[in-house]
Amino acid sequence: MNIEAINNINFNSRSERDITPYNPRKNRRHNIDSVISMSDNDVRRLAYIKTINNTEDKKHKKLSSALVLSTPLAAGAASALLEAPKFKLFSRDLTGASARALNGLKGAGKWGIMLGIAYGINKVRRYFEDKSPNFNRFTNENPFLTFGASVAAFAGALALGGKAVNKIGESIIKNTKPQSIIKADKRIAEYADKFNANSVVKYISKQMNKLRNSQTLEPLKAAAKWTLGWSPALLLGGAIAHEFAHGREKDVEFVKNYSEMKDIQTRLAQARIQELSVQNRALKAAIASQNSY
Image (tube, rainbow, N blue to C red; front, top):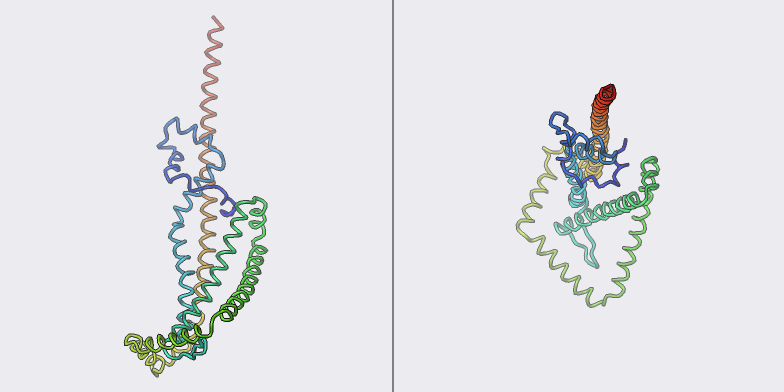
């Protein structure tokens, strides 16, 4: 049973205390009837609350989010360290630390845009799942087809987004006065020179050059370069794998909790039927005894 298939119910409307009526040792008589009469949706809701508590759902979601959010940072670091320290901005060919910083910002920005598009597509899919039970059933019954459609939508959005950004950039340059471009170009050059001359930046650049030219670390350079270059994909893949494994864990835990609660509800109902049967037989015996006089 897939937990996502019941996500149209507001499970957060009850607290963990609602699970306590299922403990028969602590029950009072008035609670037994309320447990027996609970609807299947209420039982599912309580099973879900217990599931997310037992599986530490909040902690796992934070870990997945941290892995995803660190992806643009890793991409920025990879671009800054691995790409040549050159960056063309307007008519300026920037070099040195400022070029590395801009390469890093460019790399982080690309991954940030891709993750933003993926997040938007996922939000749209969940919106339609919440609004349409048929669509929700289709996505749950056809996970591979849904995944393929999401990938296609992602690729299309990237292609269209890239064209839109290029057109916007061309439009801005076309409608900007030449004097303003020259002025901005000059300021950029001044800021780049100041950044490269900063004592902290110079110290970091010096240490990085030492590491880059170190003969001692030569055997590790290839592995470090590969790890750094693939770090965004590795982090994103780790987040997806972790989310998938945690989702499977929640599915198994939910089925177990739901089954246990339904079993308790069934046994309480059977015990109440037996109790009522005994009471009914006693009443019939009393009536028969009175009628015999």
